[in-house]
Image 1: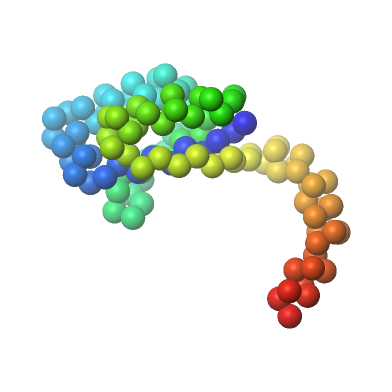
Image 2: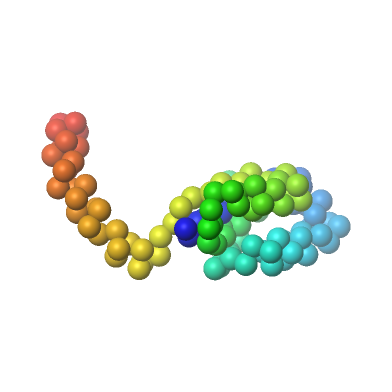
Length: 111
């Protein structure tokens, strides 16, 4: 299953890793093991944050994916199932069924 891994590195930990030169090397090492589809880095809520898309084959992989970030950076880690456009196209029947079965319920609740 395609997953978005969101990794937020606290400022103090990130600053220490930048100062001692380990931040880029450690991130490269973790990503080399994970072999993500893509990885992007930005600021979110004042923290250095990675948005990493990878294939989670089974939930038992979660500790192996999260622990390097926890141990290296004291990071906050989140996992989110994610779709690409092909996945979204395959989801159309399920979306249409939900609209057919529940649209009226949502309208009645909102009224």
